[in-house]
Length: 59
Picture 1 (tube, rainbow, N blue to C red):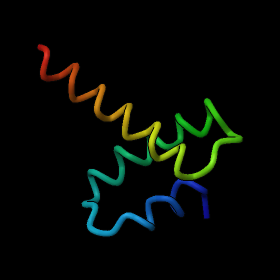
Picture 2 (picture 1 turned 180 degrees about the horizontal axis):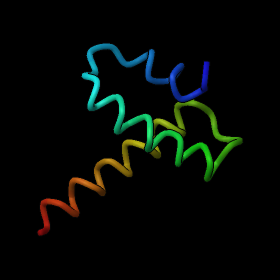
Picture 3 (picture 1 turned 90 degrees about the vertical axis):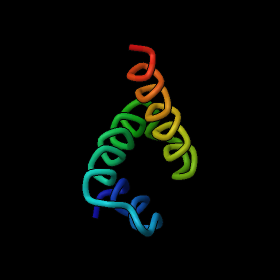
Picture 4 (picture 1 turned 180 degrees about the vertical axis):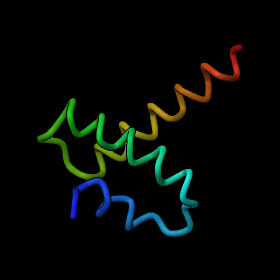
């Protein structure tokens, strides 16, 4: 099982679309920082998600 799926498995209640989006951001975070701990990858992915929504709101 990929590391990103293990992290997502800890987050109960995510819908399929939310999990898919977060999975992609987790994969990017893991590519950028493969040595990072799981919680650091999750934090990076959530910061990216926040930035994505901020950019959408700014339009």
